View (spheres, rainbow, N blue to C red):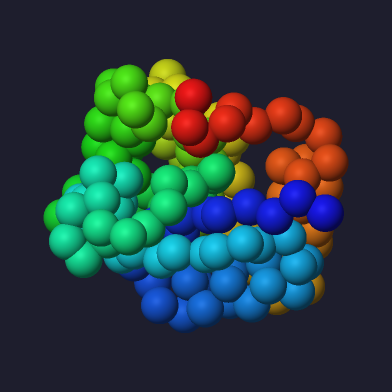
Length: 144
């Protein structure tokens, strides 16, 4: 089975832990990197300290409401840069506001997912992510 490198951009440590656990259970991860805001995500993508040796992710899971640089700002920046615009960015957030959903898609989010309320639903979401991103779609080669 193909395995993915995922960048999780999430400021809530408990949510990050639960997401990591759910994804680990699906055994499709090559690596899962976690940063706490959009500014850290940009440092990661640009391989700035302390991320000089990190691999570019196949997929980014990003919250919206974060300090310093929120998910909308980071999404706009990622999609404006030629080196990163091909990386799918999935918004994974508690917000179900129509304005946030529309804004994320206008900013070229690949998907908008409202975080599940419980661990069982989070496991189902992780299974769906695995089936879709491993078995269904073709991702661009990171070196192209």
